[in-house]
Amino acid sequence: NAGVMQNPRHLVRRRGQEARLRCSPMKGHSHVYWYRQLPEEGLKFMVYLQKENIIDESGMPKERFSAEFPKEGPSILRIQQVVRGDSAAYFCASSPFGGANSPLHFGNGTRLTVT
Amino acid sequence: QQQVKQSPQSLIVQKGGISIINCAYENTAFDYFPWYQQFPGKGPALLIAIRPDVSEKKEGRFTISFNKSAKQFSLHIMDSQPGDSATYFCAASLSAGGTSYGKLTFGQGTILTVHP
Image (cartoon, rainbow over all chains, first blue to last red; front, side, top):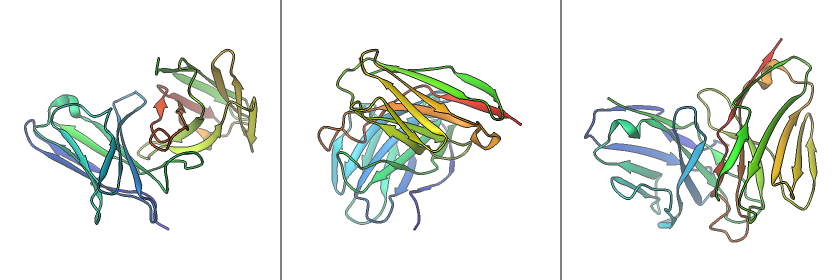
């Protein structure tokens, strides 16, 4: 029973390039969350998606960041024209349903380094 | 009002000792308080969680104490072991409504080191 799978584990991009981070939720999970962890800080909520829908993107920067969770395939977090400040660990979490009694299962993250 | 403040930043405990990590929150609407354990290079893993209708929850060596009036909660690790060395995060969220549940507000984390 595979857990939440994220790839790549490490991603290096030069300033101005695009970064694409992928997340495959646990089997049977239709709710996906993205969190960002800056060095020596806690995780910060970015976006919550269900299949084909963005439910809450209140934590996403207004520009350059976008997320999707298509009917088929993994959820994608896309960062356009990356800057050094985007360097962080990005974690995806999934749950089988929203609401109470639905704890989050986190992947092992993608470490993005912008040079 | 959405902050969760965690202390201490780092903690060193001898094997067999008690590790205590504290968190304080501001939003009185929070009603779900989980603790996560994170090892280097891994994602956070749910350790134990509590709701404000109880003052204490225990699972094995891990206990959450909750003080609703003070808006504080803490994690106690009894008989701490070197394998417990990790970063611990407290968090809080609103469980009312499906869209809020997974939107956790995390504390800054505590790096726990248990010496053999």
